[in-house]
Amino acid sequence: MAKSRLDIEEWVPPPAFDDLDKYSHIWVLFVFHKNTNTSTLLKSSTDRGVTFPAKVHPPRLHGKSTGLFATRTPHRPSPIGLSVVKLEEVHAWGKKRYLVVSNTDIVDGSPILDIKPYLPSFDRIENVIVPQWVMNEASLREVRFSDESLQELERLQDHFIYYKTSEEMKAVLTQVLSADVSKRSNRRVSEFEFDCLSVLFSMQENTIMVEHIVLTMSLTQTKEKGREHKDVVVNKIREAVDNYKYIYVLQFDNMRTNAFKELRSQLADSRFFLGKNRVMQVALGRTPEEEYRDNLSKLGEALGGNCTLFFTNKPKEEVLQFFKEYKSLDFARAGFKATENFVIPKGEMPFPHSMMEEFKKLRLPVELKNGIIHMRE
View 1 (spheres, rainbow, N blue to C red):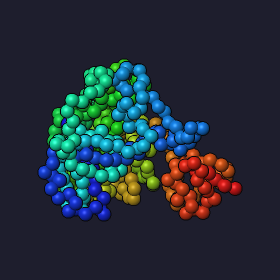
View 2 (cartoon, rainbow, N blue to C red; view 1 turned 180 degrees about the vertical axis):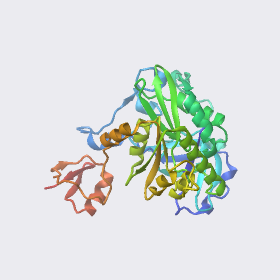
View 3 (cartoon, rainbow, N blue to C red; view 1 turned 135 degrees about the vertical axis):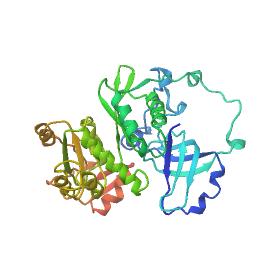
View 4 (cartoon, helix red, strand yellow; view 1 turned 90 degrees about the vertical axis):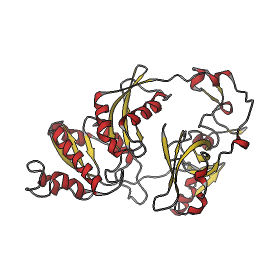
């Protein structure tokens, strides 16, 4: 059963969660921040007012369409979502505060507005009527795992956050991937994050093949930061030393998560280690006497600032050529200086109305017309 974590903001008082653990299920009110209809509502205006796509194609209708309000599609005029989930754990006190839930249908990163206990005496309804297509069984895809992904799953089970064994994790990943309804090109590698893992998979006709599984978060943050876990990290790095021909130290600044995921996807047959430099130096050996293999202490001296260990079997020329040609374009972060001058034209701007205050802080001559930001002269 797939589990999720709902993080609690610091300003929420811990006593507000007293006795919540006495309930087995809760309602979660959230914002579906990836709602594609939001931008449509802001930009699309007719004589009848603001409009949005009225028809959708539910998977169980097999290509046929029906009215948006007759479905549970998350792409709605309003991004507000409501879901009932099973409450597994309550951690309302301490430095890190969160709830562990299961059976969720909420996208990672969705803002949570409120939670309420599920009360069967009020929330359960008898004699419910629904269309026949809703009762149809969902067509699940077959999921297979490559030999490499099974070996990686076995090696990484010490890092799992919510699951204990590789078999349990495999079963949950199968459950998640089999219900994937998105359209994907054959053989193209896709990626999603789950627990502490990044799962790389491809579509082969109507079968999903899990190609590789890698650790997606910092090795020093997956579990307790005690001596035992550091020993695990050291052993994993040394294991990579034995399994790959070449090791590189890659330095980076302002690395975006999506950019790193794209990079790792293109180098799926290689391996990255992100962690504390000191722990990685211990794994390599800080002195000639301590080094795990000859000259690794010299490599450890290069570990400084924001960097990662990159293990690969690709020859030096191919690696250098790859990073020379590799580019990942993204929006600049606030505070960055523009590398060239540009002019914002007068008229409608392709930004959500929530950006209005930010533009005003920058003293830009903007105004709001029918929910759309416009640049004045």
